[in-house]
Image 1: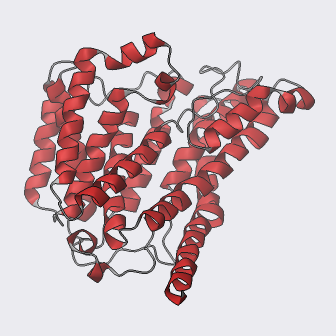
Image 2: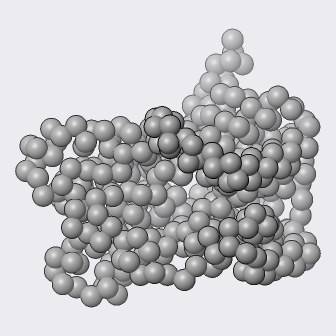
Length: 376
């Protein structure tokens, strides 16, 4: 996450001081590219190997995103523990890139790929439902009229955005927990433990099936196992940040043992799920910090973070390239390479033209607000 305005790390307690140089940007990019590769299961019908039963490469990558987010967002709150500043920074990081990606999906990808006449496409309620539903982070409307209807994974335009609503929910939980618990750091591991228990209860009690059977609109935006499954690594990351934990060799050993446990546990076993969480938390943390304890970390002028751009542009561009390659008869390697080049190019543009300016706009707004408040 970007450096915060108006408060230094030295003022902010142990969580903020535990920010030496790290490889989080690299790990997030690797996770985003793993999601790109995992789309092959749906978009190209590749039947990719699964790292662990019940856990695809894509699901593991999303867990990595949530773990890193929990770590960095906890530090952000510690640097500036105020609701307005917290939400300005979070929204400035998420929504500029998201809104532009959604507009691109509807106005560029969808409009050029639709089989409908332009007037019918733009007058169709589904076009505008997709735009507004995804732009606000709900992502329950995944189709556009006449778009990708002949693709192997038909009609879905951007199937990755649904996790963003859970990310926003985690931000709200962390802020509420940090504000109510004040400096009680045990609240973060307690939240992770409660979410673990709830995940098990939801699985055994089939809570998600009950929601779907009830036909409630709530079932479209919320699944207990997703909420808890993402929340556990998020709050494990927050725990490591709050306690200023440093990378140690035993973490690598725990990650290896967790990987072995996840690989050899019985399918659907809760023990496997706990092992996967442990692998993601300790493995990611160790890889991020091992050998980097003396360096500084920040969002300096030369920093480039392509991970979010890769994540939000991969699915629609892969679908568009698939449609083009099927029409032209181009082989699969050409399709994959072209999609990757386009995704990386759009991620680069997104960071430089949208995401970083959005982050800086949020920082400027907070700085101006602070000056006005101090003057008053």
